[in-house]
Image 1: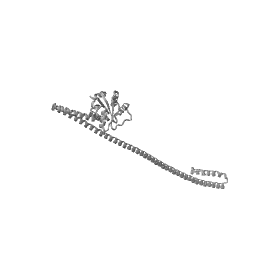
Image 2 (image 1 turned 180 degrees about the vertical axis):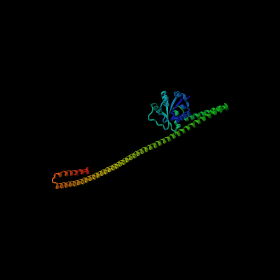
Image 3 (image 1 turned 135 degrees about the vertical axis):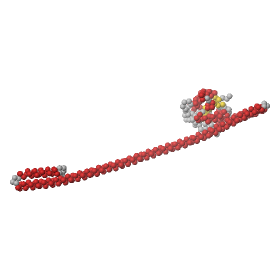
Image 4 (image 1 turned 90 degrees about the vertical axis):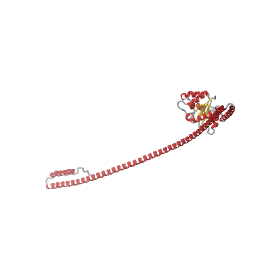
Length: 341
């Protein structure tokens, strides 16, 4: 029995390519181990470790995202570490769009530097033939030659079986038919897997283009939002400046109105005071005129008294009393009259 070939892959990103490699290697007579179909979930790592111990080569499926750091158990890293420790030959298989990460763990970086195979959908048969040779299998052409040899042997066996009877001939014919149908089924599955990979790569390219377009639209939207924010900020500043100028104008009009009212009130007070002063001056003048008339009457009475009386001193006291009465009358009539300038 041929040695086992272990296929290691990341389920999230390398499922399709890993199963295509598995089908192509098996169609070339290579015995493979792939964990999804071979492992018991209850004893996952022990079976994986046992398969790596018994394998003759370790095939590492390299797709975008295969070597991203994972929290907890990283099965790909554990499998590569186990194969490296045991000294198993590591053969990387690179997908068509694989891009080597800028930063890799040393163990994975070393694994991707071994002689490997790069998958190309246009030449995938040649790529799988090369991979089959690396793991110790046969090319598809060699497989076909083997089928031809087997067919020749089958023919000889058929001729030999003619002597043995019809029953043996029928059984041999059935075996050949079964092998032919199995070969056709394997070829059909390989073609279907190749078509699936082509369709998957086309879908991934469409998704990348859609993602780039979405990012471009998002960037344009962000720029538009930023420009709108600047316009709104400028509009707010202009509105605030307009409100400030309007408030200053309103305050200035109010100050001017108050100042005008104050000036008008001051003018009115000044006019009232002037009129009151003039009225007091006129009242004092009239009072002084009255006093002069009163003093004149007092003098007339004194003169008349002196002319008719032999004692002139007796006329002085009535005259003084008359003048005092004139002053008292002036004070009663114009007690708040201003003094003459």
